[in-house]
Length: 167
Image (tube, rainbow, N blue to C red):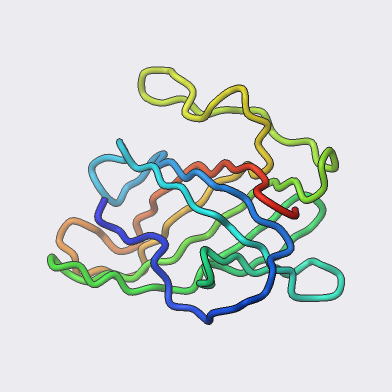
């Protein structure tokens, strides 16, 4: 896919995150493009809790704001801003929504153990890893002038991660 999923404009910060996770994102299913085959990206998600009770959080990749959301117990729901992808074939706008079970304190949360399979029935993620971030993201296309990408299509991705620091 030609999407620049995580290239964001954001404010720079020298703040230390409340937790960091090394994240792997794998394409799962979609009605936007012909295939999800081969989409796999790695990122570091840095969480910054922005209120006293720790229920609101900002996710940054590097120093760029990626999404904001709400954290309740072990569940984190988040959403990005709407971005413009200015592709040569035609522009389109999109945003990401995500939900995850995340481990912020070792052993605090019962992590899901399901592991999606690829088309050949093989596990997508390593089976001998204790995942601390277990979720899904959906890329939603809101508008499109691109001939191959329809408005209102969705691209679903599996997201797994391990604690890098804090959390």
